[in-house]
Amino acid sequence: MILKIRKTGTTKILAEENYSIVVEASEKSGKTGEESIKIDENLEEEKKEINEKNKHEIEPTRRDNEEKGKGNDSEERKRNKKRIVKTSNVIKLGQSKPSKKENVVYEAGSEKIKRHAIHWFVAFLLFVLVMMAKRKI
Amino acid sequence: MWRGNSWYVVMIAIAFFLLCMNTARAVSVKFNSPVFVRVGENFTVHVMLNDVEDGSYDIKTEVLGTNGERIGRVFSEGKWRSTFYYVKNAIKVPERNDTSIKLKVENYIGMQF
Image 1 (cartoon, helix red, strand yellow):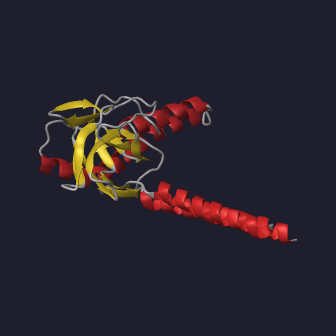
Image 2 (cartoon, rainbow over the protein chains, first blue to last red):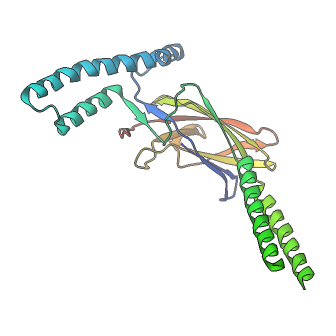
């Protein structure tokens, strides 16, 4: 998710930050708020169950392949992997993978920029000191 | 000769410092968002601005898919619109420095693993 902030009537962007969210496929529509919360609570368990089911589905296939002498068939592996992913219905956006399901609070802006400015200023001072020392020598 | 040059250096250093401090005056943003969202279901993000001048601010929250396509919808001006658009006058400082924006992700068929 990209957050952009500008002053009304202007085009200059005052702040721009990237945030990560995970988009999951909706299981049922028309749920009440209470039901949705229950689904959220059980989400991890459901994912585990789905993964377990997938394992059971995949294991016989692997055994069959081994019997046929195709145990290391990469195409078959890819197909099995695809099957797991499709069932779990988890879509990830962004780069980082959040571990918690609670809301996350991000802070950005002036503090980060101030730190950046101070770093540059210190670098500049060091450069000036080195130049002064060289001239004295 | 050296004394004259050193004054130049000091002046440049002060000017550079002032320039740095000027760039440091930026918006401080506090952003509260759910980590997991469901396709087609509404969710709310909370945005708080600090260290900003008085006035009105527009906010854009773009939700992009894996290929950079816009997959989010934002509730603005009484209807669901593409997240391409800013939510106009979302925050009016000093009356309020925070706001909640209603969003949803829909028609997303792409996947990233």
